[in-house]
Image (tube, rainbow, N blue to C red; front, side, top):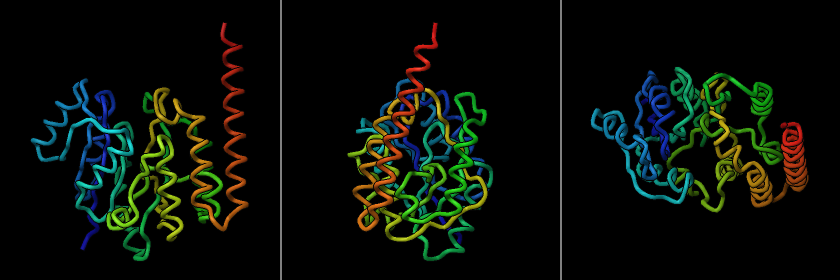
Amino acid sequence: MATSFTIVTPTFNAISTIRETLASIQGQDYPLEHVVVDGGSTDGTLELLEEEAAAGRLRFVSEPDDGLSDAFNKGVGMATGELIGWLNADDLYEPGALAAVAAAYEASPDAEWVVGRCGIIGEEGRESRRFVTAYKDFLLRHYSFRLHLTNNFVSSPATFVRRSVLQEIGALDVRFKYSADYDLWLRLGRRGAPAFVREPVARFRMGEGSLSITGFETQFKEHAQNARENGNGHPIAVAVNQLLSRVIVLIYRAIKLWRKRSTP
């Protein structure tokens, strides 16, 4: 029997990007369930979701929530598929992504989660930050829990988790605004390594307004906390995470200061 999927998409005022996201999901040559959790959009997103739901292409709920993690958790509660995928309303699946994920999952029956490669695109949809993508791909090929404790190289759009496991250990911890995904991956990693998809699975959009940019410093502070809370028995890896997080934040501050001084 083929692996069943539920894709969860949190949304809020995403009309500028969500059509492309929906097309990437609906273009998969694989059966799936799509659940959208909207936070009360007012920009036309809600009307589009109503049209898509009427056509039978997705199910959705629209109501106030406590942010991205809360929205995703609601979607997990609505899901019926065996594997849960998380695709935000500005990210994209590659063609054939779900078939590749299903093949990797079915070839690794003990795996509770599946991780694939993920590219980065800018606001205009063009590939960017290729060095970061290559760096993450290299670390993924050498995955170990200890290595993952040093920094987060697992990308949410290219990660899929057994629904039964999320029901057992809980999904996203709403204490974390920017790094709830890393906390979840570490909790999963303590239980066992993921199955790995060698093909590119998704593309993550990193625009100037994305959470990863607007909360950069807080994100890395949370990463350090994630490592401390999940790193019992691996003190060196946790210490490396603390050091890397501080260094990255200092580099980011220096770049911001340089740009400010260079602007006429």
